[in-house]
Length: 324
Image 1 (cartoon, rainbow, N blue to C red):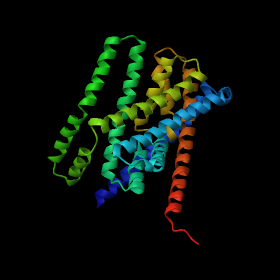
Image 2: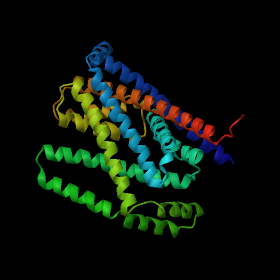
Image 3: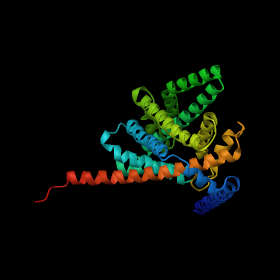
């Protein structure tokens, strides 16, 4: 009991330290942005953005959110009439992930799936793990293909694509190996995890539908982000794309500024600094992209919440007995 109390105190201390570091990182980032770019200059940059372009980019970003809902539907083989609920789950989960550090927002997905669709925590968590692995694979492969094609490294590009195809083809064998290893373990919880993993779609049409949907999600997201960055800066498409990919990868870091502030911009700048782009220009583009990302995530989460509320209200109206 004393050990449990000590562990809780240690955990609380770690959370406090990381929260303080995140707050400090936020303050440092705000100061660096004012020093390198200037908040007034950022506001002037936003005024030059074409409203029609911003609307189209926003629709493309919302389409990527909609495809996240489709991926959940395909992954769990759910009926189409669950679309409002799935869109709410995907947008709320994404918004929580953006705001909370250390990937703590991932907990929202199994909780929301349990609450709205009564899918147990093990099944939703293992499906989320599959989604995240495919997200990482898609993001890395898209970045690698763009970089190698721009550098005309055709041999390495062919090897990269071949490795990607082989990895996808071997997904079911990899899963079976992991399941067999977990089954041999004594703890019961690992047996439950093995059962959940064995139900994952890792071959055939269901799996490749999930893979295809994942690539559509990331291509739509990257194109939308690329459209904004190229419009507000003089960065080349290669520089902008690499910065966008690395900024998204920064979300796996254990320490974040609040809502990713600092780590997102830092990864964006470092991702293309070796291409001799100006740091101030990279930082300005990174901040504007981060602001766009936060606003779109907030709007998508709000729209998802409103859509599911209207859906439940409409459903209750249909099922409630009519009064005379």
